[in-house]
Amino acid sequence: MPKLPFQPSLLHSLPTAGWALLVDPDKFEKTELTQRLNLAHRYACSAILIGSSTTQNPRAGRDLLLFLRTQTQLPCIQFPGPDNPLLPKADALLFLSLISGRNPEFLIGHQVKLAQEVAALHTEVISTGYILMDGGKETTAHRISNTAPIPSQDAELASNTALAAELLGMHLIYLDSGSGAKLPVQESVIRAAKSRVKLPIWVGGGLRNGEDMKKAWQAGANMLVIGNLGEENIKQLEDCLIHAMD
Image (cartoon, rainbow, N blue to C red; front, side):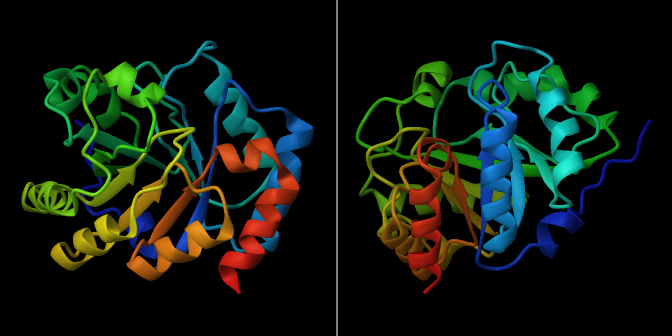
């Protein structure tokens, strides 16, 4: 039986206030992604996340990872949806439990089905308390999981959910308003979670300008995950990074 890496060294080697580039395997195009990677290197990106809520091509994730290995030395971390094939050569896997919802399949069902496969990966497994927040519109993550998000201003419920994850022994809190959200995770929510747990807090969804990013860092986010913004407009992404890091 392979030994599980219960102490995630890669996670703890990441900066206390960084950003990660999220790449959807079904959407990536080499020229466009190369441009985003150039920005990632120029503006101190911490990691590349690979994943999507759904996938059309089972080989897309592996093809993307192979391409990334030729372009960057940044750690590549899988952030999988329920039907994303696992990537044996990724540097780490976010092993998600959707703790904001009450759908047993996303709390523990999928995890049980994948347990042996995950244990055989011989890669770092990062147990992740995944908390969906209301971002002002229904997103794919909400539909696929068939769960209601936590209201955007309910910092008490969100922070108590994060605390429960810490008490259960999870390694990471991921606050997400979902891909394409109108609103980012609110500062009050990030601040409340940060005050209640010692775990790293990652924040994604709805981050559309440098001010959003700066406020999230100031509220205590350890990692900001940027996906749609980079896909939609490479110049806008650069402007946001310049503003956020000013």
